[in-house]
Image 1 (cartoon, rainbow, N blue to C red):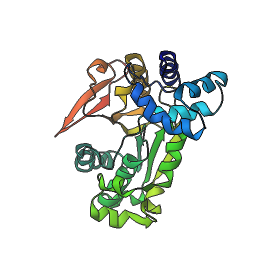
Image 2: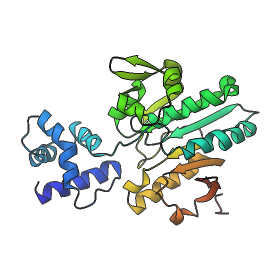
Image 3: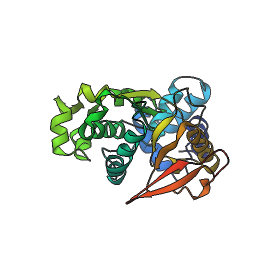
Image 4: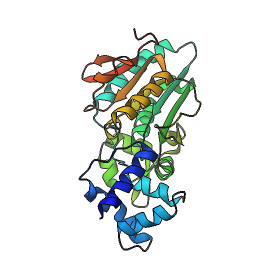
Length: 275
């Protein structure tokens, strides 16, 4: 791969998604774009970039971005946030929202949907009192391909093995060929939408809980700040933000205050005055 090819793809990825691709990641580009290059009948990633340069506004550009963006996820990933959700936060919010009977949870950068479906199964399994509530789970990703796949809710055996307990598998999935598909009653609980977090957010009500886990590490400092400012405005004053266990929020204490619940750190928005 020529240096100017890597530079072009690095700039394109940052401009379209906000994701920063560090130098030395040429191997990642080759691995992610190799199948797409071959599918288009091209001989190299250099040829693919030549095509992009010639047609900068062609929809093919989006396919390249979607191939490059990391999509790693799993069911009930890291366990502790879901335990905190079940044992502390959902009971707390049920008590606080009893008069309105509304609950709104957003899985931002949802990838192939495992996180959103984990939340839906948790609510269905442990909180039958929410059956009469208006419960909205929004799951979003910048990749239209991921949004479509997540909405269909079909997973390989390997993906199922990564986090789905046997009792939930039997209760909330059914066999579809060699894969497992999420039952319709759970799929109906989740609304999947294409949203780019680096751009202005579409209108929707303020949110009780936002999951943005293992995402901020892919952005530069300025982009992280802009995303977190948007999310702080969209969280209810007593709402909660979850980020990844390895992601630090020390630089954003003017926006969020840390709340430690057992082994889980989550964050609440500060008031506009920063108190």
